[in-house]
Amino acid sequence: MDPDFLRAQAHRVLPAAVLPELPGFYSGKVRENYDLADGRRVIIATDRLSAFDRILCAVPFKGQVLTQTARFWFEATSDICRNHVLDTPDPNVVIGQRLDILPVEIVVRGHLAGTTGTSILTLYKSGQRDMYGVHMPDGLRDNERLPQPIITPTSKAFDGGHDEPLTPAEILERGLLTPAQWDEVSAHALALFARGQAMAADRGLILADTKYEFGTDPAGRIVLADEIHTPDSSRYWKAASFEERFEAGERPDSFDKDFVRSWVAARCDPYQDEIPEIPEDMILDTALVYVEAFETITGRFFEPDLSGDSVLERIHTRLAPLFGGR
Image (tube, rainbow, N blue to C red; front, top):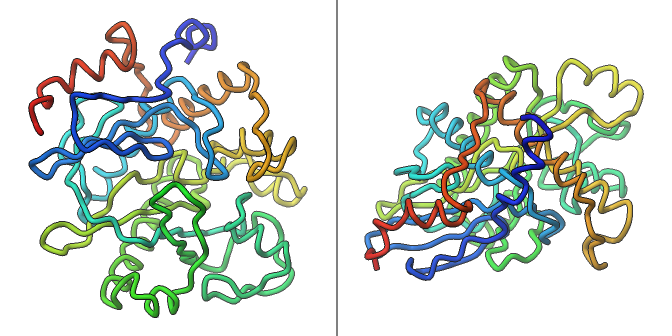
């Protein structure tokens, strides 16, 4: 995307998507959700950028990038497990099957990386070697590839609170999942990650880690929900420069939120302090990163939807047929 075009369209940002005509409203960190009476859920991806359990800013076209990237991956992995997608009436919108979301978020990691309090790199650098039910050897370096991908589950904070690390034993002891559910979501997560790694490699990328959210449908079947392999839920690195940067102890070239997170973390305690105002140029640069990520990950040209006077007005028009669905 041309930077001048982006700057001219920077006003087309969607910080929120409140539609009073739709029932069952629930606002998440990034997405607005509406539950229809017939069992469908309307999920609208806003342009909010979330990190450290907080909203940092709104990035133009981010919601469209996330929704369209997830759509690409849902279609590419539908043979591995069921997903919740029923329709996509707008580039920012998914109409999905309403699920009972399982209270465990499944994070799969292929490298020793991360910046948040629950990341294995943060825990490792604090001296921990036993985490998430996995023993990590001494001597690992930042961003080093793990011998094999590991699952690092966390509690699912439905109220927007802070997720907490879990071990498989704790998941079963607390009754968060049944043994059969844990076995199934673990197998699905590792298979999805393997598919994601292979397809990313074909595009010159390393899928370093990602998170998956699962739920159960009315029949009790496990269904993949939320998003998959997006720049928000996943850490992508550019493979061509990874080895050189790793050997030099430098941060890999990436598409993920660390672009903004690192800037914020260098200026405050992002969990406790007031977040400093993020410069407009950084927000626009971040929008370009998201667009580049979409095009590199999917191999498709990003086409911004400029219909309507605003993003919210466009979505309102396209969802109007649902307004009687109370």
